[in-house]
Length: 86
Image (cartoon, rainbow, N blue to C red; front, top):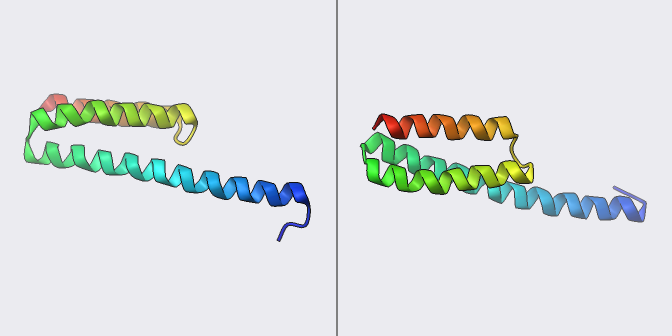
C-alpha cells in the first residue's frame, strides 16, 4: 500500500481512469459485435448505418489513447472492407 500522499492520489486516479477506459473499450467491442452480426446476416443497410457509429467510437478511443492509432486504422479498414463486400 502506498504511504505517500502523492502515491495515494495516483492510485485513486489510476483506478478511476482504468474503470473509464474499460467502459469505453467494452462499448467499442459491443458496437463491433453489432456490425459483425449485421454482416453475418447479410443486412447491408444496418451494417452501413452501424459502421459510421463504430468508426466514430474507434477514432475517439484512438484520440484518447485508449487504443493505438494503428489498431484503430486496422479495425476501421477491416470493417469497411467487410461492409463493402456486402
